Image 1 (cartoon, rainbow, N blue to C red):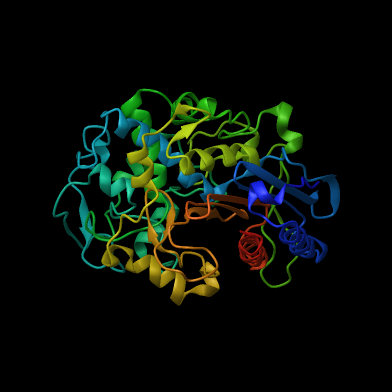
Image 2: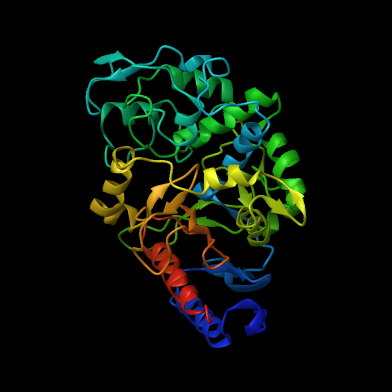
Length: 413
């Protein structure tokens, strides 16, 4: 499916959009990407490509309204809930989190990150809201530290969603989190993922609603995001593709999650802000377009302009960001080059230097299920590429890279 634009109004050239389709089709035709949906918008115009099928061996075609597991692309959207609470002064950036998250009071911190869990010192100060929103509260997923005692404990406690065991309900998740020491002092270093799940618990406890209820009322419904949530209802399950985690050696398509009876076929015990959402290209486009618009959607204000600027500009010092830079540049066989944007705002990457075709100021993030969503203020551009292929192989990373490289060439003004 292809929707043609007028060149003058969009700033995309017809030749550039044709080339974009050809590049995406090449990935699908290679047999390595079963199917995808791409959405690009600029100047009030939107162009969509839906290529391939929902399963690797055929089946229903990908469609514009296909529902995708957004994985870590959930992070930029989850953060909007916290920004609503900041706008309403129900949270302050430098509030201590203990009144809402008492499980995180009186933290102990590992003497060294690879040391035994008993070898700790007291935290130098309490954890603040700012620490949680910037992913610097002291604990997270460190893919360069797998096998260390603290990472083993995170997995054993079921605190992450990538294991066969379900993540427990929020109070039990907090209890288990509270039993672990921090890897780093609060505010010291950026760490991935766990803070984004913590944001969801914080929002729920401050608001007195479930995280999903708050998101639905304050973000999804005002933006018309009718297909976004933490599970796919039975009457929509046929719009959810199979999620594959191909064998790293052979490339064989192994189903990690099936639509019917799978993880997203029923409401989860834990509504994970870090990676739990399902959505569509059009729903996510509405969200990122609202950010590009400085917080408004069709004349209605969702977030203050100041809140959007805070989210979408770099919030980290070089010292705080050092681990992320190391993962992106020193472990490209794990990260496939992701994370080389240079900066991090709230829940998303922010480009602070020009390392590829995208300009400084572009913001967004990618997901380990084969999802990518960014907006670019300099070009007033939004791009989304959605497939359902895990990063056990480099194919989805190559697809994403080629998508963004080709999209930036299609700008013609």
